[in-house]
Length: 282
Image 1 (cartoon, rainbow, N blue to C red):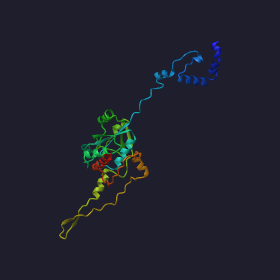
Image 2: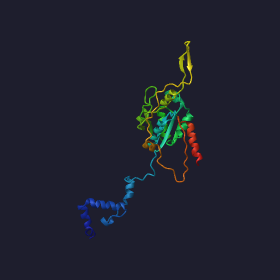
Image 3: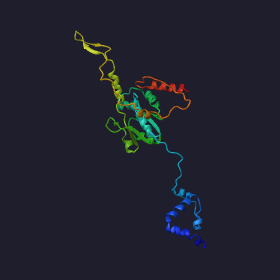
Image 4: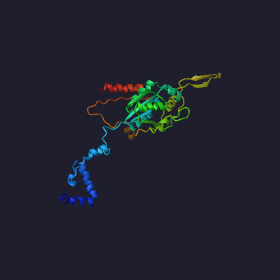
């Protein structure tokens, strides 16, 4: 008699299996019993599916991606800043390695700025979260293990310009083979070598000539002929300015500090002035 009273259910299941399957699933998800339909109780399916891994437990929080980028950062310029800005955009936290003086001498030549000065410049940039001192010029297997295991680095970043060792091999070959390498676009039109060249081209040198006796003599305070003013290829468009800003305005009742300067050849003294202004504003 109980079967006949529920015969419409079985007919529905037979002729409309998808419809009744959906109803049964909905009832199970709502934690209802199916005894009305079949006369049999079933376990609470959401608990069952949780055990089977169908509905895994929700993670407490998203893992923060940590990226690493190294460099000499000698004579800091806007190309360095743009590189670090791009690197930070590839993760949540940016760890920067400042190559040691010894490594720079062995691979490129003596640096102009000391390690302490270069550290101050890198640490003063808003995209940098942590700094590793005396980093190697080459990503060796030992240093790569240190980055991954001790500093929890997910990816190693470098520009699209080749970085070759004295023997012609790629300094980032191991990171690329490990699949933990990401690349950013190099900023064209500026480099530390180019800046040194500009300085040398503007230095006043004595003009050497011969006197009436045929001996060489120098006339001081003569400027060497330069090739003309340097034209930057880094155009400060509105889009570029937005990229370098944090996209946030000052908070209500915040004190806004203004400081000006030529800021030619940005150095550690400029960074110190910046921090002094920030501290004095509080």
